[in-house]
Length: 367
Image (cartoon, rainbow, N blue to C red; front, side, top):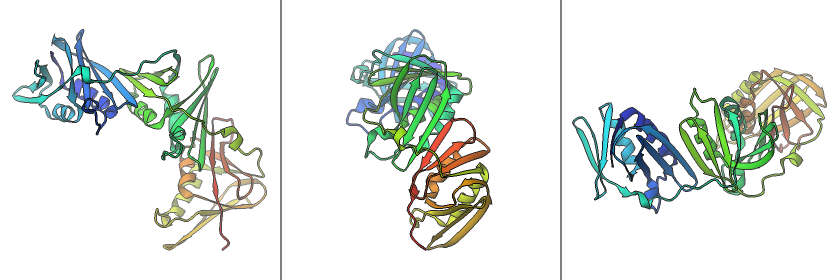
């Protein structure tokens, strides 16, 4: 195999593909990038048995062929090569020569046959989503994804497609995030995408990309994002029956400025650390929110105006969980619905049903 291509183009491609490469594997091929040179294109693939990223770049191909190069070393070499063009050549003894001007490296390669076959998407359905809509929906739900393996299915986001409505749901046992959006589609489907995969999709979406195409199979899903193809396994298992977890109605409804409430909780949180944990005590009464917390470092309190309809209430919550939800709100004002000190706190838009966030309260001790 022998080809010449733009150093910048192949370096950028390898940097993105490298994110799907296993950093430590009992199978050495998985620590590498598979390169295929044919039809004036270099196809590069990274795969860690959970997610695969594939892309191409233009090249002047002298001899077609394929080979595996160690991803970390190959990527570092490309970043430090000085010239605008790079020549890569491999011989029958699996020695790869990477050269640009006076700079030359000779490194060991692996046979392309050692690379595992990428998953095929069988019996697939497809949907196409606007990049900006997808970016908004993921950013407003991914904060609530579980980060533990206690229930692996909750380490992903549930996608529910019902004709022209798309709903994303994330849950971690302490909070729930739901985001709704209208899309152009027909038919219904339900699948769970790992949060790691969605994070990679967000990074690969460029400013010029308009849509992302999803191809959904029975066990895997693929995404066409610009010049990249991403293939991921889907998560399997029993996802939370989230509809039954949402309290119906509200004994107390609060409308408050999102930024003011966020800033107020943020200030109170200065006394709360991973080592010094304490709930934020929050009293809703007389169109005012009063907050306070106490830790070994001291005490803090704050107040802000709001509009309250219903019963007065004192409730406690985890500052981080509440802040994560408020920071995902994209409107100036937000509605909070409460049903007592032990019922989940609902955070909603003042109009419509674009999002719904639930945060479990913390049981307060008597002062």
